[in-house]
Structure formats: C-alpha cells, structure tokens
Image 1 (tube, rainbow, N blue to C red):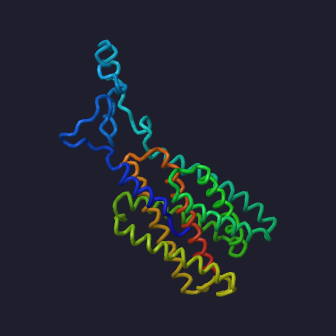
Image 2: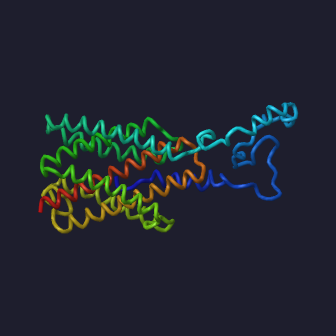
Length: 302
C-alpha cells in the first residue's frame, strides 16, 4: 500500500471533535450543574452527580464523601479514551492475523505454485480497496479491518513464497530490514531526529499518492511483459532508485503513524480509534516489507 488515509482522517477528527479535551472552560463560561463543561471531560477524580440532582452531596454522610474523594482519579481507560496500550494490543492482534494467513498461504501455495498469482492479485487489490473503504467510512468497522488483515496475509504469503523461490533469501533479508527500520524510525521520531509537521504531512501525502498511481501503472505494464516482468522500470539502476524511493516513503509513513497515534492519545480520542490506528500501522509495515522485498530481489538479479 502506498498511502495511508486512515491517519489523515484521525488527525482531522482529533482537531475538530476532540480539540477541546484536556482544556479548561473559558472565563465567564459556566457548565451545567452536575455536568462537565460541554466538550470537556470532568476533572479526574471528582465525583459526578446525576443530572437533575444538584443537592446529592448534601444527603451523603461525611464518611461516604471522604471515601468517594479518596478514590483514585479516573484514567483514560475508565473514561473510554484512547491509550497507548489500546493501540499496541489492537496492532498486535491485527499483525497476528496477517502472519497466520501469510504462513498458511506460504505452505498452501508452496505445494500448488499455479495458485500464487490469483491469490496474489486477490490479496493486493482486495486489501487496497478495503483500505480506502475503511478510511472513508464514518464509523469504525472492525470486521472490515480484520478482513483487510486477512487479505494482506494472503497477499504477503503469495508474494513472499514466489519471490523466495526465484531469489532465495530475499524474504529473510526483507523481514530483518523491515523490523530494523521500524525500530530505527520509532527511536528517530521519539528523540526528535525525524520530525512530522503539517507541511511534511502534505508533501508526503502528495508523494505517496503519486507513488501509488505509479505502482498501479507499473503493475499493468508488467502484465504486458515490459521490463522482463518488472514493468516500467527494469532490474537496473532505475529499478533500484525507485525501490529506494519506495523504502523512504514507507519509512516516513511509520513516523507519520507514530505522530498520529501520539496526537490522538493527547487529544483524548475515543478508544474505538485504536482499531484504526492498529490497522494503519500494520498497513505501513506491510508496505515497507514489500518495498524491501522488491529492492533485494532487484539487487540479487543484478
């Protein structure tokens, strides 16, 4: 996948719908009694009174009030907001689905190579179509997200077993490079070496969409026999340059993903968005793996 519109949607909604989280009401604005100010969560740890029962605290004994105020402040998990644990768990669950179906496809296609291309195309175009459907839906559709992970697993299994048969060892190299890049990009983003700004997001989005169009055209060209099956660019210096560009874009996509998760948590986005964020992270990892796989195959061909 050459673009990830999921995080654009999260960023936009975080700015609009959840921009008021973790802020105090402006001076002169009063909240209804017993309720937090509109658009803001109630102060953590403060007891909440039912609406229409303004004098509830007066009917409680001193012991009950003391016990209530001694309770630990409510955290994000208790208020239904997004947490880092939510994103990690959903990402791991979706990644496990991808790995399971990729492994199953590897063994299935290994004994029946003639099925590699049909499964390859089904997984590639199916996951691409679902990714846009998921991104532009108004609600978080968990079944569609899981179905997307299944299709990506089918695609990865088919493409990996095919590449490994033609260029032994490229799958192992691509896996190691992908994991190393993931860790490296996270550290570089965390320490501030790689920054994500509004301007860089716009530039990245335009480049990623352009790269996606190029990949689709290249797929058509490869089916026409151009470039000995490589498409518009052959397995020479041009192919290496394009693959390096793809690796760079997919790597920066991870930094954008990390930053979007961080912004979503800070904005107090709902917990349900952990599925979307997990979906986006896994999609970026798959994209990076495919770019490394193609790069190492071209290098080995030379």
